Image (cartoon, rainbow, N blue to C red; front, side, top):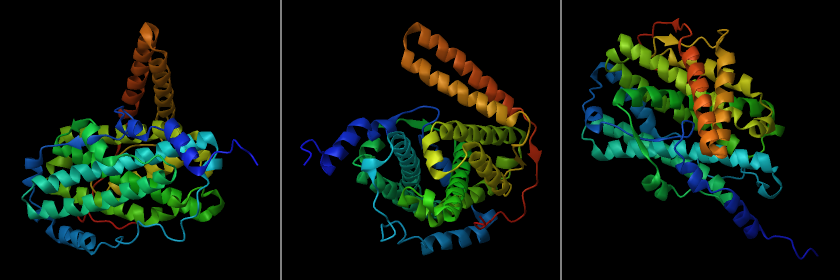
Length: 364
């Protein structure tokens, strides 16, 4: 008998010591999910009359709540062997779960605040349903983290996390893309693991299909909100902003995914292929409302994503180095990242004309 064998509880305590998930969730960096606040009075003044028919249909679907019983562990939830998970994979997978939980919960916080402050019945009803969905998603991910003894304290996070103010139109662009890219990410992983079930190293991936349909419908809501004011997608200045958010969201995803090589290797996914596939799906979907898409096959696209990824790695190393040398190295790497972003941003876009009817249904 091994007198030094650790108990399951001791192992969870050991994991918790190594993974301060509350601190991970609180981090405010360019790559981490943020909490947002906005001009709630402006949101409250939205008139959905121009999209009423499509709006009522979407709200009806959300009210029916097709995923009401979905986010619960069933017999399909296999036992997770956290004890013997490869350490690098464990670290990256916990980082993935914490990041996903924080992103879902940030949506819940924003939507609940709008519901609390608003008087517009259309907008309040929408945000109530979206807050409900995001709370379920965050809670379900947190259950998975709880099994490893590293659940995020979501109540504490609400008070401790820094909030970023975004004008409503920026909330539309950023959240629309976040929801649609979330759909594209989840369905791409789900379809891959459907074809390769031996690479499903955790049961949470089995829940991704219905889950990503929530993300899709949330994106539909923001597409309709943008359609209530044509200037949001047609004015010259706003077209530049849309281009900025597309470039920022895609490049952030690329850098973040490349920080998790063991996670993607365990899934049997090449990161460059996966990211391009997600960008392609998201770009195709976003033509429903945006008058352009990024040219992700342009010769400058991939080299500058790689350049940005290298620059962020150097910035992280410089942060750890500290001192004057670290500060100088961080400034140099930051300048390199900014130049890479500028090169990506100035790639000529592919122009398109959004269809008369904005609504889409999940097709992947």
